[in-house]
Structure formats: C-alpha cells, structure tokens
Image (cartoon, rainbow, N blue to C red; front, side, top):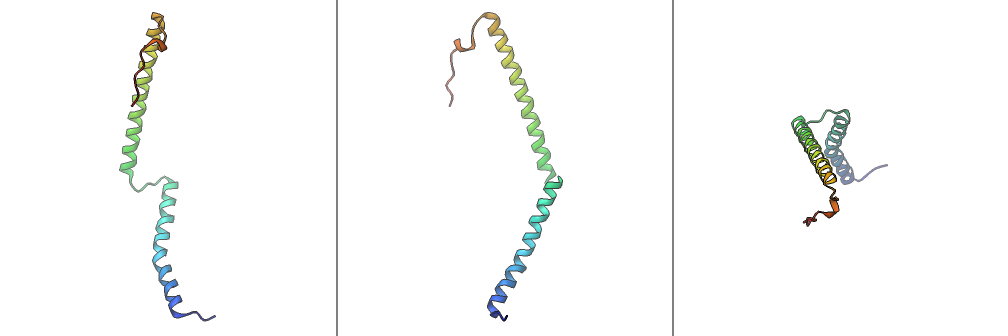
Amino acid sequence: MDFDPLVTFIVGTFAALALPFLVYGVVSVVKQVAGGSEDGDATARRDREVAALRQRVLELEERMEFTERLLAREGRAPEALPQQEQA
C-alpha cells in the first residue's frame, strides 16, 4: 500500500511528538504505584498536616465527651442547650 506523503508525514510527526509524553506518563504512574513520588517534600508536608488535623479532631472529641459528661451530671440534655446557627 502506498500512502500519501502528507499522511505519512502527519502520522510520523504525531508519533514522534506523542511518544515522549506517553513514556513520561507511564513512568509517572509506575513511580506513584511503587510509592516513589517525585515530590517527597509535598508528601511529607501533607502527612504532617494530616497528623496535625487528626490530633485536633481527637482533642475536639475529648472536649465533646467531657461536655456531654458534665451535662449528664447536671441532668441537662444536650437538646436543651441553645442551638447555634450554621453559616
């Protein structure tokens, strides 16, 4: 089969330009799956933020439980407290 030279040029150019992007994409996916993230600083920073947020949630849960115990000791139900408006 004989193709038009223009079609051959377009297909060849597309393949030559697309191949590096395809290889880069495959390598990136393999690195992420293997756990070798390129940006280790961002991952470490995100891990620290998640740990800090988890600690904050634990502290808030403790405060809620303490408040519930105080209310139960006084005989007041949490529903009897005024409700705050949520924005």
